[in-house]
Image 1 (spheres, rainbow, N blue to C red):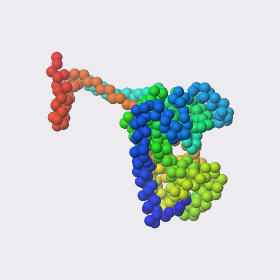
Image 2: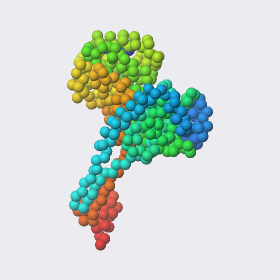
Image 3: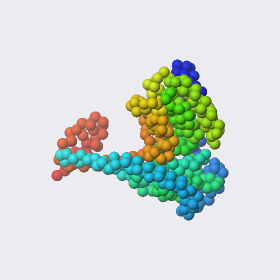
Image 4: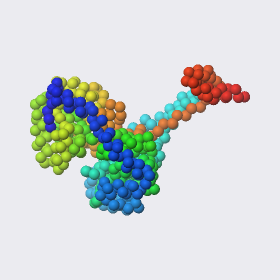
Length: 432
């Protein structure tokens, strides 16, 4: 990891690249993605099978795209009893937190006055597709984070797609899908999976919304189909910013930087500190810990290409940088984290203190780990129950109440040049 000091030219260049990372994260891929989407739209399952063979190297018959119930039952036998207990614990904690959030959605919004009745009706989406990555690792935790809030919201049907593997789909992913209440599972990944969910095929019904993280091609595909269906977000590589002071063990800081870097060569891991001594110790500790990491090649490339240790003047300046970067994950590894949280305006999730590593949030703390990346935490939020509902406005006026607003409608319609709008009111006022 490189050490950069505020005020230096290298610091400015690095920060400029980080702030512009949304533009860098795959807009150019749309030209590659669109022909695949269009082919799946036209040819359906045949195109899905074709691209699965091209990109995944597997020839899967159309009739075998959907995972059978017997395969899910078999998956339970391949997961240890201890890990099954952990999966159930995680599912319960995530469900409990999202049920708490759902209470905000049960409030009845109604305004009744002088012959008018205004309401907002909240209904769950009917059909949702969740994308679960499966290329470089197995992610049962992502199954929970995508499916459980949808289930809590009352979504009628939840379909899961995940890339096929030569050895079969991860048993833990299948078990997690079953525990989370997923209705159908498909061994499809990549752009073709997004296309199948967005447009529908004979085997894969069209959904109303697609959620879940994926690689840069999946992200580009989601961007392209947005409008045909809703999506949660266009997610980039995983990222973490750690603000730390001398009170923290360098080993804690290094471990947390590595925990994100091991996701992907394009992951972003940054330490911001006002202690250059800490920065140097963390750099050495990162090198020491990487030597025994199973995914050290991935993590090392991520930290070398995109990671940095940024030296600032004080913690206030550190928080200012955090708000400019708007990271997916933020750790406040300082002696008084609660005093700093007030200044944080832009972050997907914040983890406070030495014993709250981001890793606990990835698995079973409760809040969702599907978070805004690439600076989009400036205007978007974590996946939640609210992402799986829609609001419908309901309006009712009596004749007398409509009459009170007749002249107002006339003035608006005249100003906007929409004569028919006023006539729709006028004809009612003239009727007996």
